[in-house]
Length: 459
Picture 1: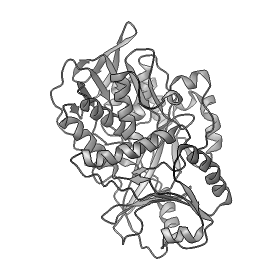
Picture 2: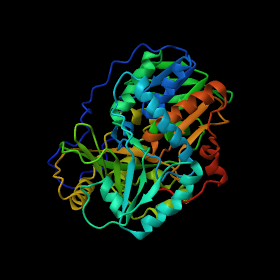
Picture 3: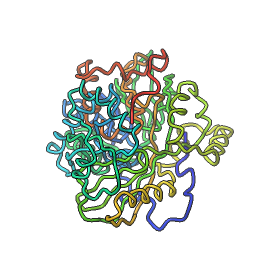
């Protein structure tokens, strides 16, 4: 596991280097019950949505987060709720998630800047257009209205766009929201409907007796439960190791930047793969990122499941910057001193990894190149950790052993958009024993039996 704040920025910066809400404050946790029906571990969008949906159904649920609800990648991502270019197994869930997000925008008391104005993926490269054409077969089979538009239509949709373009993939029903506000709104909604939501509460381990989960151990005592949902993001795999469940995960570091407000540019999410993507908030600020580029810090865990990950390492070798240095040395030192998971969990309540100033510079430079009439100035930038699987598709599974354990992890950068429907499906699985969508493609066992597809047709 990567240490909090590992890595280093590669040059001095003139902007703030943490999200605007990351002030270190954590709410005083409420009194925890000794027993509940369901414990949800992890207060990101998956955990918050699962707690919300369970509470809606009258289930007794406790949501435990070691830092702040939405404090890690669920509050640090781009905020896209995108169906375009999704994997063929993910696409039906994303279509349902868009509908559930729209419902949540009216169900929840707090505004989270829900905007359903579409997504535009612009292209200059014939290979990128060929990718769109291949993926449109997936879209057509799913009944999604995506289409390829020519240069003239692209510039009508995005008038400030400069230069020559082959066209774009346009998906009018795609959406976006402010991720920090959205995850917090869902968590607040869960609490308002009877869930116990506890920030600042570390889960040390999952309890198992005779092949079934019986609860969790926390820094504030034991909570007994017949069902445990493990949706702890980058901490999911080490928590599962403790109960004999092997989840193949790699942790990658992604950087995003926010600009000072500018005049209205587009209500769509706009991507120019892989160099820059952006969305605009209602206040005019742009969130800009090097679309598709990530950093990978090598640790001892990098050598686990290497065979499963190797095809995607090769496929994405131009999009992944590998770092060998401080994180690896720290990992060796921790293991030499036999620092256990409980110790590591307490070292950083909220993981705030070092951003890549290089990626900020690159994405801003590319933005200025293709939108020369739009003056932008970065005022904040930050990074977050994403948990990725070998096929870049998540694990959403009620595993056979130990019974009562439900996993939602490995969303590979797609988690925020899928969060609304995954929370509902988890609740259906727990209460009804049968979710309303087929989750077979997302079972954990696909890695053990070798039936996962690699590499997949994903953007």
